[in-house]
Picture 1: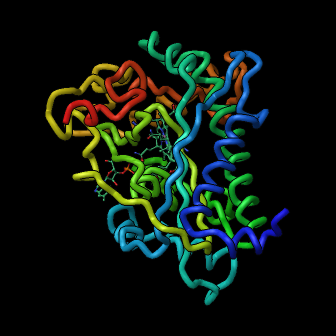
Picture 2: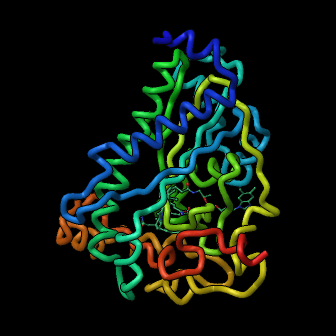
Length: 297
Ligand code: B12
């Protein structure tokens, strides 16, 4: 059996990427946290995993695109492992496609999330994403490297919840940097497995070859933004929070995490603090489970 240092020394960067990808695919397939007895199925299907360089200048640009508080990968590593410890690294981003049965249930909905989507919000989002972030960083540590998942740190926060909610580590922007897809009209992230997904990420000092970004713009996978011929998510939104001009985050947030949503979460078997979510703009839309621009090109 190879020791951890032998695993590192004898493998190329691409082989190490494949090890991490295989580890996360196995975790998603086998973790009991990714299983609902109530739904008799998993929350998520096989993930897509890609990598960005920690030194990608885009992370610096996010200080103006998102806000000055958005952390760079260097800041993530230095906050966890000490200032002056930084000498490069990688950002790992994971797309988790939502299982078909949960998407199908939400497709039938017109006014609020389905019971299945509400259960996903508590157990798939809050419980499983946490378990997967911890698993990913633990695995990299076992390989002998530092790793931190920003959403598991004590400095991670969401501010401006009354006016313009914004976090200091945006999983969608990280996924964009790793070449996993683009934003949509409604702000959602459209990957090759569509928009009905969840995202997680971690930063490591292990230097791995980055994946390329091929998107023509930051909204390149959105049919309406790219070809002007969609807008189905506008009609799906139960609170008219989406228009051709974009996404009203406050109207969305009040509905998605408000009192009614919390009550529906509990009634469905989830937790009040998670809310039921909504996701109507992510189901029964052309980008639900694929990149619609792939077939439209
Ligand atoms: C705060 C938050 C919300 C807020 C605000 C959302 C928002 N747009 O910011 C509210 C409460 C409204 C919300 C709602 C929902 N959320 Co939410 N939310 C978050 C959270 C915690 C932070 C998001 C954040 O910081 N955004 C930063 C701001 C700046 O991003 P933005 O406004 O979207 O970005 C725009 C600009 O940056 C712009 N842009 C301009 N110029 C440029 C240039 C470049 C190069 C780039 C890249 C971008 C760019 O493009 C973007 C789109 O217009 C993340 C988890 C995380 N930490 O990432 C989950 C997250 C974004 N939410 C998620 C989900 C699933 C939902 C809901 C479906 C609810 C549910 N669970 O059922 C709805 C969907 C709303 C929607 N249509 O996007 C998923 C996203 C899945 C996806 N496919 O996109 C995330 C990633 C959670 C997760 N771990 O998977 N959410």
